Length: 185
Image 1: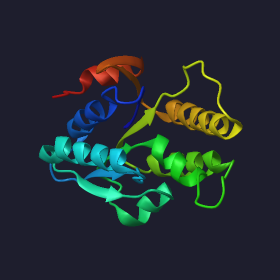
Image 2 (image 1 turned 90 degrees about the vertical axis):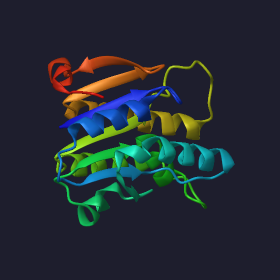
Image 3 (image 1 turned 180 degrees about the vertical axis):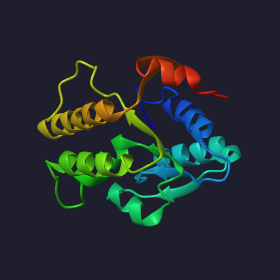
Image 4 (image 1 turned 60 degrees about the horizontal axis):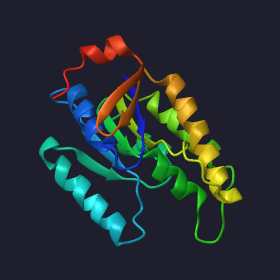
């Protein structure tokens, strides 16, 4: 099952995604948290530590992979349950390199992500919804936003369940019946 969770920054997406992934987990199968954030400052490091602490009781095996998400095929048992958090960080890691900007990184991220999620038994994917403000941005930021939108749209099409999170509230956009069958704790 593929479940896509999107919403604004710091809106409760990760917590909800963790609960959903835990619900999908089968007793003896692997349970992976795929951490994509590459910390760049103290705020990032604190955010990562907070996430680790809040999910400690769920007993994920954490795999840190900031690029080349397709490589999970060689690292993990794809018959397990996965939580990929987040597409937003994954795209940033692939697009913004130390010495250059890779304008079409979104294509690689999208292709790799679609490839790997179609091979996974159960996966919950988290992405930030960053498209609704009215601010004007520079060209590079706009390219990033368009690339993330492209990835979100492509993954949403493949998803069995599509969820938007707004201040810890779940808004279902796809897969209502399947979502009802999940026993979210």
